[in-house]
Image (cartoon, rainbow, N blue to C red; front, side, top):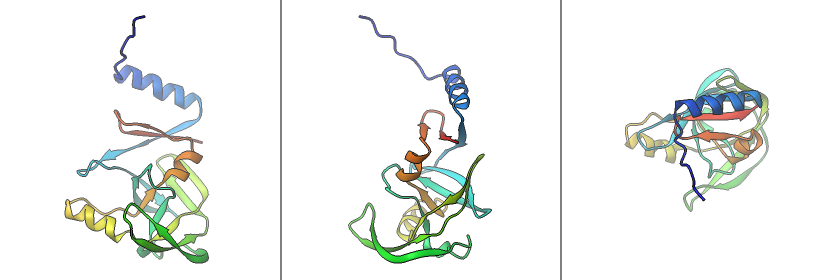
Length: 158
């Protein structure tokens, strides 16, 4: 049996885009930063924001220090959250807000609000601009996200 190795060229990328477009996916441009992380740009309640894509983060979150910038309201009680480090962090859930990534938009997105200073300090130590939030697995799964790492595109199902 002979296998043919396909090269993901621009032609195949066009095929992928066309196929996903027919399936009602929206493309969001990704950018690779100096630390090799992927980021994208969007908005929360019509205010611009920069997001880190983190498939290992269980939830999407916004920096607690930006609660007023994005006019976010909270609901429920504070709770303990954990991240990549062994440190526990205090967090609280936001009420639903307007959320946009490129042409993709949701009118009722909730975020976990927590301190992202440890992440931003790490990014700034590498001369990378800080982020406002993290797009996590719950959002990526709910939107049937497909990440095209070769072409730095994120496809989200409408």
